[in-house]
Image 1 (tube, rainbow, N blue to C red):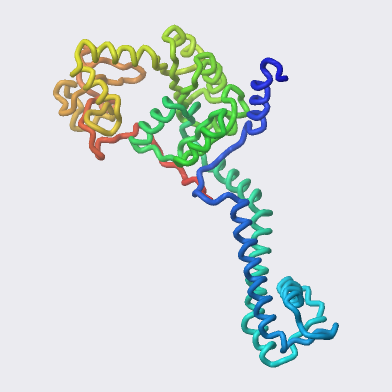
Image 2: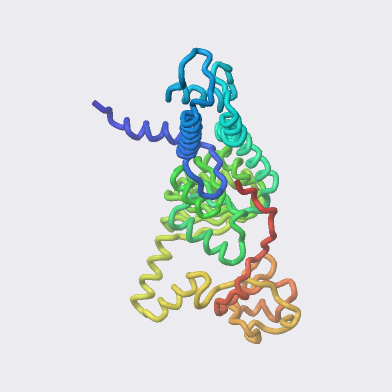
Length: 368
């Protein structure tokens, strides 16, 4: 009989076993057991072929035990010959048998050893190679993006950012589910299996060197703890978080988040807007979807635009970023544009208009 909560305890124990595990994206390969089975099958075929070759030419072999070679003797000779043991009790005596050993059995012996030794060496060096790959990856990782939670919100957020030019090698996903991390690595992102509220897990994701952190957890209280931990490890990173309830947004900002998105209320407003004005709802949905129709982009002011008002710019200016202030396009404090300003504009989505603000390339992550 199971006690109450026994299943939950078992699941926590299983998750604890995979905590802190780092997974890098890699090419899809067969399961190791399947690879070994295939190699052993090839080795067995080589053994059988060699035994049949010896048996067909059995009259050309000399057996110290006396008598002719049987099929069992042929397999015995093939085994000790391919494994380079060579007891010498059965030897090729005729010219044809010796020529067959030179031209056929010896290449089969080399192939047999390559299969067995290669499988052994690969199994022994796999962990060392993976550790070296992880070390090299950590040494080149900086100014990257850490995504906490790879559910619907996390996936959409990182795909939107990557659509503007961020490379997948610059993204690290943290999630407690091993299956979710497998899905992330399959898409080309590096992954950390673990609880993001723990500092050692975030350190494995190199949060202290990250430029921006996206928090898209399933629970608001978890998001608060992650924001506190991440801000403690990295004072300068831009932290953006999503919460379900609007009342938790101020708490998350106090915890260190620079921007908080309330997913439930945002979806509700879009629903309400679509009811009142379906056309306006379609426009808003178009703006939300990255890379199609209309897009909202942030870009610097070019020299030709200095001294002009936001209304005189070709693009549709929504806001002007001056220093640490975000000013409306019609704010009297804007006046004319300055070279140090940045503009938030609505543009028609084209490959040339996809701008990733403050994105710097990183060294490529090793692939194995």
